Amino acid sequence: MLTGQKHLKKPPIVEAIVDIDCDMPPDFIVGSQTEQAEKIFGQDYPKIGKRFLHRQGFTGKLDEQPEVKVLESKVSIHALLLQKEAENQLIQIRQDGYSFNRLTPYSSLDDYFPEIERTWNLFIEHFSPLSIQRIRLRYINRIILPLENGKLNLDKFLKVGPRLPGNSQLGFAGFVHQQQLVEPNTDNRANVILSTQPGNSDEIPLIFDIGTTKEVRYDHFDWENILTVVNSLRNLKNHIFFDSLTEEGICLFN
Image (cartoon, rainbow, N blue to C red):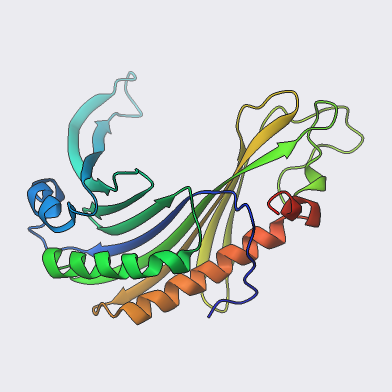
């Protein structure tokens, strides 16, 4: 159950991602599943792409003249990306699990749960995961912060984040701020990143990236159990988002 859920008229969400990380069969190679994935999902997700993983191994010795040798260089397909025609929604068949991505326009995660359940069940049926290892929920928000006389007054909009030295004439030119958090009563984890993008004399874009994770060990694939975890992560995400913003910060989206 969601606690203290708030709805914003203009949510700043640019992407929401549900990841279900799985142990896959030893002979599962996602790069060989393109035809199967198109057959299963192609009617609703006709655009297909691939994400690659590049691995390199190096060696060197501390007590000798500096020299680095490449032991191994390997490129492999890590995920198949199946995208809707409008390019605002996709599913991923990964070497290590399943993902659902929703881009703008975004309404509510509740609206997407039926499709997540449907495509997850197809993933189970056709790709036979052995177990679920973790469940992740990530929201990437883009917030446009107005400047005052060319300077950013972060305290006006955010309760957390970097702060300038006291009595300083300095102003922010940009920043990256990261926090790793744990919720003791659930053991849910969060990785929170605040970072600026290039702006102009009037405003600066802020990326507010909230990634939440729950380690699990499920050898069954009951949707209700998954949904319970996702909603627990959603509660944590909402808590971090709304309690990180001032009232004036929240008003930017209403």
